[in-house]
Amino acid sequence: MTPLFDKVSDMMQTILVTGGAGYIGSWIVKYLIEKGHTVRVSVRDKSKTEKYNHLLDLDKQFSGTIELWEADLTVPNSFDKTFDN
Image 1: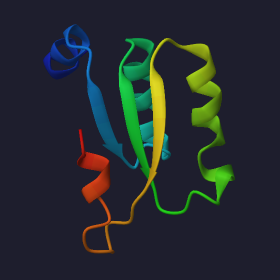
Image 2 (image 1 turned 90 degrees about the horizontal axis):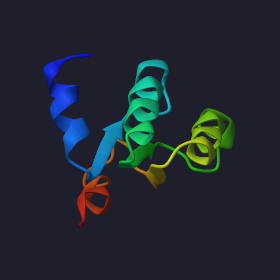
Image 3 (image 1 turned 180 degrees about the vertical axis):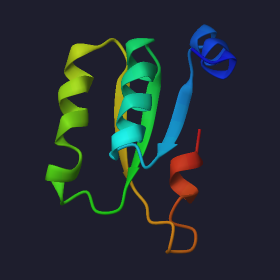
Image 4 (image 1 turned 60 degrees about the vertical axis):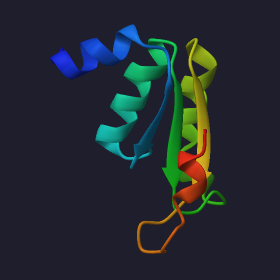
């Protein structure tokens, strides 16, 4: 594992993963919730559950928590709320 992930593992925190429903992002989300972190995942459209259902299954298996946030990089300020707290 990379040194970055080793450092993240030692600190329980809330982490935002953009693209967390994609292939690579899903593996990052899985790793983080296995370690007990709260992971905020941005999705473009929460009504398209088929894009992120696999993440909800992971949320049931591990001690961490997944929060889904609707945000789109092409829409100005759409990520503002995901960074709160």
